[in-house]
Image (cartoon, rainbow, N blue to C red; front, top):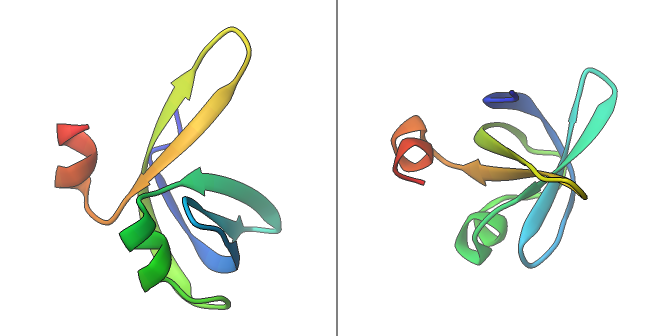
Length: 71
C-alpha cells in the first residue's frame, strides 16, 4: 500500500495532481480545493489511500493523515 508520497508536482487537473517521486510519476485523485491550492513544480507531501479493484488501482490524496484516516 502506498500511504505517503513526497515529490514535485508535474501537472494539475481539476480533480487530480501528477506528482513525481524518484523519477516515477503518480496520478493522485484529490479534491478540487486541494488541486487548486497546489502549483506546478511545488515540492509537497501527499497522504494517500490506495484502492485496488479488479480493473484499477487508484490513489486518493489528502493534505493530512487525519483526513486520510477519516476517508
